[in-house]
Image (cartoon, rainbow, N blue to C red; front, side, top):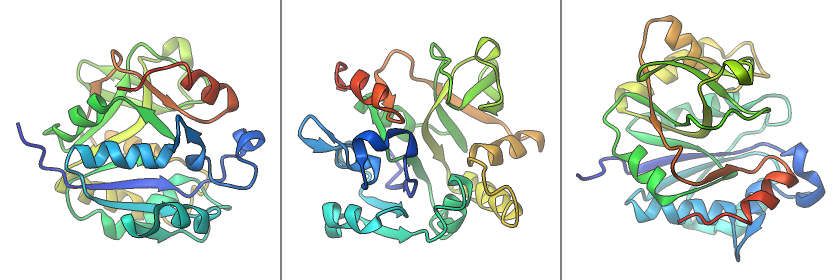
Length: 236
């Protein structure tokens, strides 16, 4: 089966305040992991699947990311990163939502197999979910059969059905729906994650699908503990 997705959008605008003891004054995606930065590892894995049109949405210390990646990717610099969360980061990059793509958090370490499975999804909107993980401080989900019916940090861990790991797939039609919903939020909800837009689509009776990636390794690096834990894992 051939992957039809050739584009990825990496969200790298945030300050990463919970891990400043390690990052000091640089974006956390520039933390080094086994000889390379996290974002370099992510880009290599995307390109291995033939996803070569990569746009990085920068904000905090954007020059440092550009200095590292140079002309290997396209950049969008989001100026209001300090006042908003990633819903508005994604809204600022809405012109990129014009063809099938993967949308990824820049601080994500994961197995190559997860990217492959997500890129092959035929669903309009599909999220990578670990159904065996119910972590605090993360986006948790509720599901019914193969559909997500709620997503967000408001879901209590003992009532959740898993974790959203920070990787989603949108078809061209899925991108259209996402863009339209993001625009509805443009004048408010500055503190929201873009997962709140997905909840609005669910309320409009749209099906949000998922792929269970629980048997593959992944780690979102939000804290020093996350980083130390990741160093003990093997991400094939």
